[in-house]
Length: 98
Image (tube, rainbow, N blue to C red; front, top):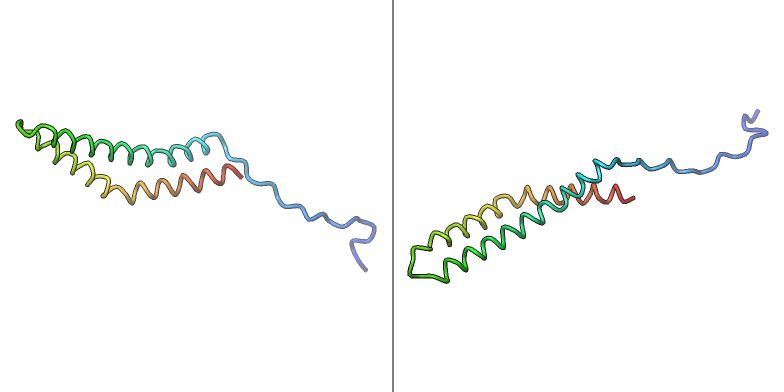
């Protein structure tokens, strides 16, 4: 015998999405914007140090140029970490927006 006799058919309802906490959304923003801010600051710092080293050749300001190279080298070394943080933050941000 059919067991669903007398009962209406089950509706095709999708389960409700998980609600993300405020802490999750804050960490998503932190992981998303931190690499952007660090990259912009590192590039600006490097360019500023290069400009300062190039502007005054009479004094021993060549160390500023080397510091600019160091800043860009640090960005190159840290780029996988920054990219990973950005991607994780983007995924978390997309999940919290859904």
